[in-house]
Length: 71
Image (cartoon, rainbow, N blue to C red):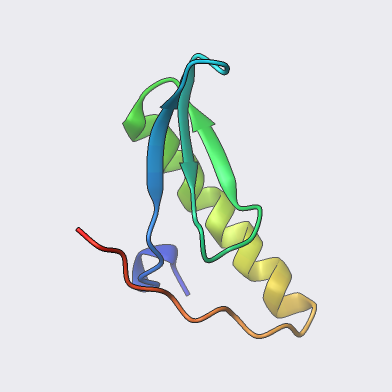
């Protein structure tokens, strides 16, 4: 299953400490990625999500239910 088929909310923010953008998926504990631009962070989080979900499935754990994000 591709990550774009999973409606997990993604949060992207600028980190002064890291001097770049961080993307996180609150529903997927510990799933985050870094990028020099917001688009780069989003590209990287898609890869991180795929790996997170693959690991979850391989370990037999159920996938978290995607939450709804307020606009």
